[in-house]
Image 1 (spheres, one colour):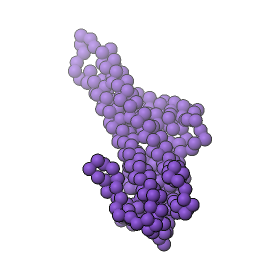
Image 2 (cartoon, one colour):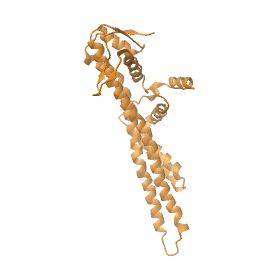
Image 3 (cartoon, helix red, strand yellow):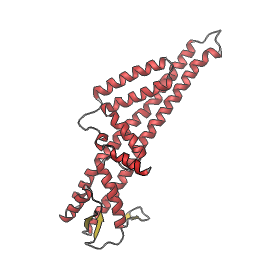
Image 4 (cartoon, helix red, strand yellow):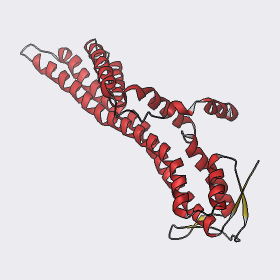
Amino acid sequence: MAESNTKFFQAIKKRSLIVKQGGAGAGVTGLVGFTSLLAIGSILFVTENYFISMLVISVGLLIYVTGTDVGRVFLSAFTIFFSTRHLIPKAVYIQETLAALREALHFIRDSKGEIKSGPLQPGQSISLPDNPLVKDIQRLLAEEKGFDYAEYVVHSYYVECHELYDYSSANFDFVSVSMPIVGLMGTILGLMSMFDNLGGDITVEALSPQLAMALKNTLYGAFFAVVYKIMGSRFEQRIRALDYDYETFCRALQVLIENKVRIEISQ
């Protein structure tokens, strides 16, 4: 089962997860998509399909902020829920290289939370996995580049994935914040309809549909807010993990440069 899952995630084209950087936002596509789904959601609301109506409107809100990137955002969310690896190959290189560096350098955190390495001889050789990041580090150490230059190279591997996570998290948070307001609007409409029907001969049975409508919209608005918040929080967790890996990796670079370590690529 684990092997089949690994093959599935390896089969996903990572380029399809990368948000286009040439655009400045959702633009007309987002506005048209949102307007269309809002109209459909309104029709479903009138026909008393409140749950489906809220679902359609929530997707419309996501399209409003993502535009044509909505497919990439959903694919990213699906992938990140079922995989422990990062979405961008460059971030995966940091992840797998750091795992090898932790083992080779015997990293620990002291009582103050600072990262310390184990005993290391100047000029010592360590073995790291075969990937583009390791080859870049190997070249930097051979050319005796400084730490600032090395940090810049590693940052280029880190930043693209961080931007994707931050972008996706912000979009899901927008929908999460908006959905309770949409549910509140449905609640107010239900209460207005109930008050309009108040009169001398009114019964509880006559008012109950409008009250049920108000409560259902409150519930569904809160439900979808929680769903999108959970989806967004997954990306926030990955951001924190990626930041921690980047910080640790930079500390490892310092150790490698200070001790003039030689890198051997494992086959």
